[in-house]
Image (cartoon, rainbow, N blue to C red; front, side, top):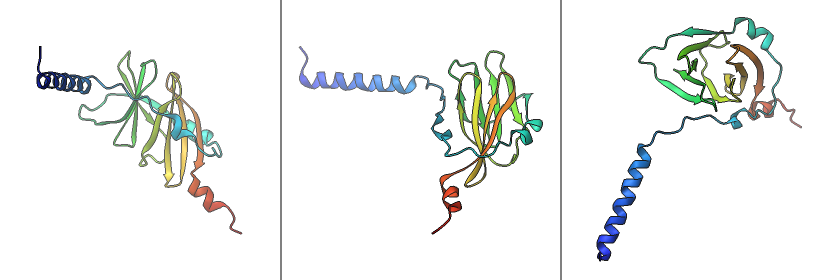
Length: 164
């Protein structure tokens, strides 16, 4: 028979081992949330202006590149991430091919709110100013830009309302 002190020590040890094991397990890949894309209103489409310059260029990734905002689609066939905030990459996980998205306006502005809408549609925003942005949807399978629409945030809309 064990003393109560030894029993408590054994239970504490088991809890520590389980906690360490839980922290050592690989973390699930982030899929993103569409909550960031519930824009109040999507304004005019700028797809006609942007699409001709858009491309997904096959490239190799520099070994020292720091991947940021890594998201993987649900069936784990594609991964998207930014590098330095202003470069957006898509990886075909089966073929290990890397593609960089090129030709979107304001290349010095960071990409935000990366999320997979479904297996092939990558959704993200790029803010042209603090209260006004462009919402993009890219079909990574066909490598084409599907949507490019401007949108304001709540602060911008409030500033535009007439004061009585």
